[in-house]
Amino acid sequence: MKKSFIITGAISAAMVLLGCLFKVQHYPGASFLLLIGTLLFSMVTLTFFLIYRIKIKRNNFDLVAAIVITVTCWFLSMGLLFKIQHYPGASFFLFAGQFLAIFGLLPVVIISFNKAENPLSGLNFIALLAGITGITMASTINYSRESLAGHVVSYRQMNNYNYFQMDRNEALFALVSQDEDLKASADRIKAVSNSVWMEIEEAQIKLIATTDQLPMEIAKEMEAWEMQYPDNQDVATQLFIGSDYFEPSTEPGSALSLKKSLEDQASELRSLMKNPENQKVLDNQLGLFFESVSNPPETWEVENFYHTPAISAAHVIESMQSLSLGLEELAYRDLMEQQGSN
Image 1 (cartoon, rainbow, N blue to C red):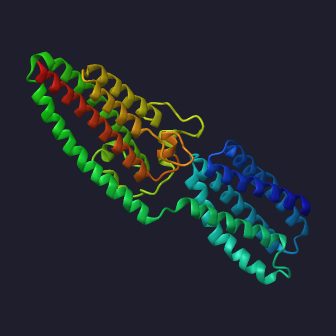
Image 2 (cartoon, rainbow, N blue to C red):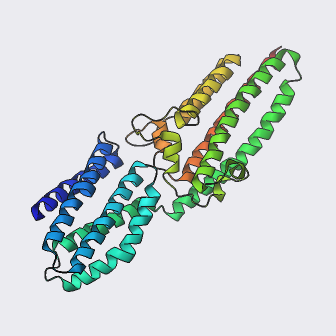
């Protein structure tokens, strides 16, 4: 039985570590390795360990220690899996695991180290694995304050610029609308752009509401930099990517859905333009925005929303609004050129 839990433990540890490597590098099979490795450890290895410890127990302390370590390791391993895979319930498993680790596992480890003749006994070996798991989880949760502050500054600058851009577009719209021949085109530009703006704005509100677990009505009155948990790396993945890294969600409000709305806006505005140079500028702006800057290249949605802090996702969404406003301005200016040529 001892060999069984050691062998299965080694195999599961190897699969989890390899799965983490694949996850970081975005190789195929990461989810499979993490899932199978964690389930093997939590369901098989821990079961073998508990049976083995019950068989060789010398007193009630050994029995209590075995149960505490088994349950703690189970919660920690499931919390790690749920956290990395962005499954719902990760917070519960993490909290329960950390609570048991502090008030159950830690006292047991201290007592067992004092009692055990061999410090590397099976009991302490499993306890050590649990400690490593906890450290690994902490490294996946924490995000430097400096990086978060950088995202906040960038977001606020982009937010201020967008308000300025909205005022400028309103002025351009009023100017172009004075020409009866161009008023219908101006109205169409405004309607299309406002529709995209509202869709992106709703995604921003939903991000804030989900991150801080607030009603949408309250989130509407907030800015992203006011979020209490700007370092949350699960919400952006859940909302904009979904559970499958290789097949991101296309549901309304997802990253791919927002991307398509911007592309549709660009296509509609391009059809209203007469100047080929302006059409070329529009295409370039759209292409550059969705171009990958990572090495190796990633898809735009994964690069910007997968396992990223909530404030970083908010900054990307604000950038999408900026792009939409810029395309709208370009379309108005093209109409002004048409107005001047008439």
